Length: 406
Image 1 (cartoon, rainbow, N blue to C red):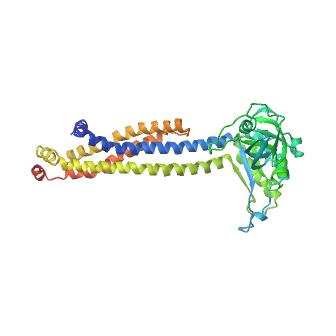
Image 2 (image 1 turned 120 degrees about the horizontal axis):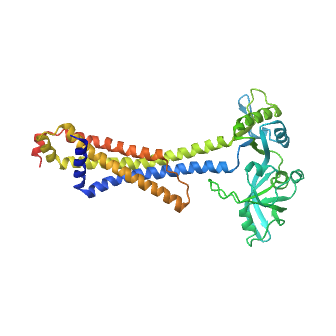
Image 3 (image 1 turned 120 degrees about the vertical axis):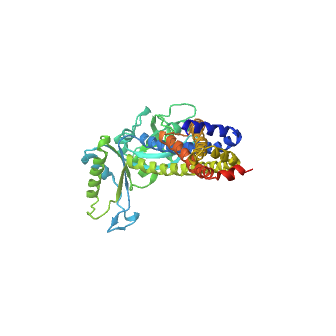
């Protein structure tokens, strides 16, 4: 029997009961659309995370203190060696692969201007911070080395802080705000950056000299972290090794001692965040796949019912010369037609839902070709797998008993 004739018979049989065929196909449609949509949301989250990390700047390394180990035994945070101003100066002067370095202190406090107040992130940094972050000024000027050395009470504010404390549109440069009752003069404002993929408002920030943050806000001069920019993207790993060797030497660590600091680059952070997003994508896809399996079970159920209803028809076909493989191919073709039709419609709906979610909820989604192909192939496999048993049952019917079936 030719493939064309098999498909013709399959479509003819499915058209006999359009409502039942539609309801059976609906299970596959929902399953495929769910998989496409869930995977698109997960892929969009992963891309958003990478874009957010990339928006922090280029060629960035993050250095932070950590608990040291002696002979494999942790000494605890209290025994840790902090990162100091001298460490930062040594890295800047001795590491040839480092372009910029900024000690950072980050906290959050209530900011007061007149009778208005607002909670914002306070970042203590030096004059190189904006170069590291590749973040232009909007108005005014940024922190100078002199202001950092003298722990000056000056600051640069983001767009959100500007809008909240100066709602009338006045120029904030030159105005005085208070952080923890300490007056700071605004010397500049920042270009808006918008929200990160983590939902954090990057413009809700006040930047002050890190020395001012240490002495006037945080009340501590230890446990700095460093943000470093390598000369080029290709030199990030060599820069990382240079910094590690220098800090181990400065902290007098023996060869068997573990680092009492950690150095991470954007790639490491992006990979960690992406792996988390990937796990969530797989989880969402797996949950959505359950509905696809349920749709497959629906196909098997309907096909078994169809075999029972058409027992006499099967007997007649066998009596006029149809072979077992012809009967099996016919019912298997019906199952595959249902699953592939559902797969195609499901892919279209899944792509539409992904677009609608991105448009209406402002969530980033990404429909990948691999997810579309896999969903289509999986729907075809569902048709073969769940249609095989009903088709085999139809092919194994006894022609005489089938003809006598009422």
